[in-house]
Length: 500
Image 1 (cartoon, rainbow, N blue to C red):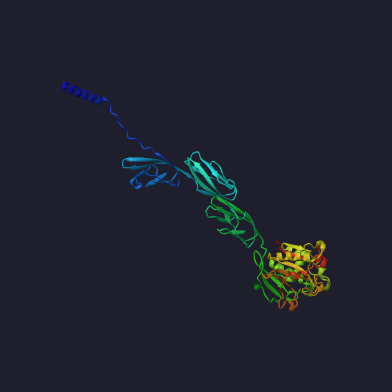
Image 2: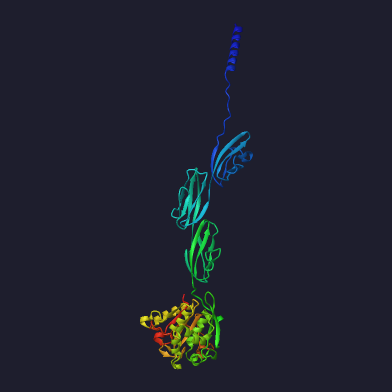
């Protein structure tokens, strides 16, 4: 019985074994590691790691080193594109899918109304936003436009990546500038982009500018100063005018100036001018008497001819002197009939050139001038302290442009109503050549004056404009066309030579 049971159990085990052999075998495949996604901006770095393992024990590789490289678990985004980073430890591999996005610039400097388009590579569903849209606006396509001076942060979202750039809207300290020649101005550019600005001038004969923006005005005219910084191109329209504070140092002028003819250099623009001053009573400056002008004319009446010759020496290269002025220039400009009528009179009735006649000669020589017949404001109210002050201001301002003034003075100080003959025995014409650095007027005088007043100064005298105005006369006749002196009422005033 026992034998039967053992045999039955044995048979059962055999059958079960056979059944097991007949069943199909189940194979377990090795599971693939899922790749992680990484999105980066060009130039950025990101650290990755295999959990629980030192990065130095891992073998790292990149499928596209142009897009991204990896070293010891640190990914460096190199260029827009994609790459698969593989980390191999022992027999197991781990994967990261890297997508690199790039933008054309991390910052940009532009000017107002200027636009720049940021180019995003390898982006998707891109949008932009400006932190200060009043400074710079930007479209979803990345076109930024400068609106006002300042800066703004620009935020871009693309492919799930969020990054920022900066826009700087540059401006100049001046966009329109007027300068006197020989002056300087430091033009400044306002921006924070870090780029180095450069400056240039459209006309270096009018104005030059250094690389740092220091403008030096050179001559009258217009030019455009151009500043380049980043993508910005900024402009300053420049107008250069005649300088209005030209003076001649007193130290460069003579103390004693006695002589029949004297040359003196006076600061002017654009070049210094050399004046020849004549002594009207000198033998060398007397008329011959053989050409219709009496020998006695120059000592008695020749102040205007001397003054006119002094101005033309500096502005017309005139070397003929007062004799040539009376015998040739006057006749040529005024006509033989008018000239003969004046010089055919007796000595006491002959007259010097009037200011109107001197203006005519200046015009004939191509020299711009303005004949101010009456003190400014005095056309109806006459000569007063107010009109005299206006004349002082006008004459002083003109002298400081480096140009002369021709004046007529009388023997009477109209402010004190006293005859003192400080500047004239009757009426006298002189040339104011300029101003000293001490505020004194430089007077070219063809006649000798009281040595107790002027010391040993002869042809050149130094005085204040306020002192001179007390002896100057103002004409009320605005229509007189007499070229020779015809009295205070119609021949007074002064001439601004080469007015600016």
